[in-house]
Amino acid sequence: MQTSFTAEQLADPQTAASNQVLRTCVHCGFCTATCPTFVLLGDELDSPRGRIYLIKDMLESGRPATEEVVRHVDRCLSCLACMTTCPSGVNYMHLVDHARQYIEETYERPLQERVMRDVLAAVLPRPGLFRWAIQGAQLAKPFRALLPKKTKLGSRLNAMLDLAPAKLPRYERAQKPQTHAASSPRRGRVALLAGCAQTVLDPEINRATIRLLTRLGIETVIADGVGCCSALTHHMGKHDQAMATARAAIAGWTKVLDAGGLDAIVINTSGCGTTVKDYGFMFRSEPEPWRSQAARVSELAMDITEYLHKLGYAPTRPASSLRVTYHSACSLQHGQRITEAPKALLRAAGFTVTEPAESHLCCGSAGTYNLVQPEIAGRLRARKLDNIAITEPDLIAAGNIGCITQLAGATPIVHTVQLLDWMAGGPVPPGVPAH
Image (cartoon, rainbow, N blue to C red; front, side, top):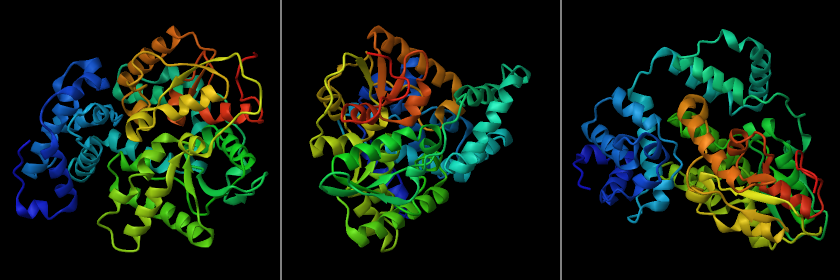
């Protein structure tokens, strides 16, 4: 694709990077077939190729973002299926992230949207505030009939109430900054990202991860000062807030690295893993030592299934008769290109593993997407659950808390690591049916 940025525009590192992405695109349109919003809506502007044209025009012109551009970019899930499909290697992720930052800086959203986005950016990365918000949603549920049904605000508030769990699990102290010693001969040392929203919604995921790693001889460190990885705010275009959060994580992990070394930074929330693995790019123009420290963190980041596969996981219990449908989170299969390791581990653990049709299509969670675009997210959820139901599973396994929350329903859904921990000597995960 030809571009016409000025020399002055290209002096900006963000624009220079986007220019390279744009010039890689050859207009082939392969991306449209795997884009969830194009599949649902059939609008070229709701496909990656259409959004690329809109973003190119917006950035080249230097004008503030328009309502049309904002509408179609906002509908993008950042599922990155287009990147898996693209034969030219277009890094759409970096382009759409730049577009979101540009929109945030140049476009004034309606007041209701500004307030909602600011609240989400303030609450979700902070476990204490998030817990209070969920408790408030629980109290509000009996009054949901008073909410407007056919307005954008009403649909978003209803989506928030739908996603709020009926009961919050107790706070898990194992997630606090500390070192969990290996319970068998030590084979390695890792840092675990405890995260933010996951620590509130399902702390058992971190407990299972710690149990399994320490049982396998891996000393597991929860680094002080590391909270949210910045993924939530980064994908909302809130650049300064995201960079500040990422700096805190980088500083926390660097301290642990310098104190005793690490074999990996293990992440059990795939949306976070995609972002942490991109820290090197995010900090490419930052002064030292941030640039080199961010690159070092990115190189060490590994998904929990990626690390267990490398480590040589093996179960200790007899094979289960349960039939598990594996839901591949977009951030894992498209963002990190990890597709086979989770399924191989589940099979090694003794489960019968199936995959649904259209496994490449997003479930509609996508960070805050199911809160700000509930209609599209709801349609994607229904489509995903219909495809899963055809496989007749006893339970669903996934590697991302957002997907787990989005797909919760009649069929139990748990994190992949919970099943692996169970079959290697841990407790039965909550909700798993008798077998």
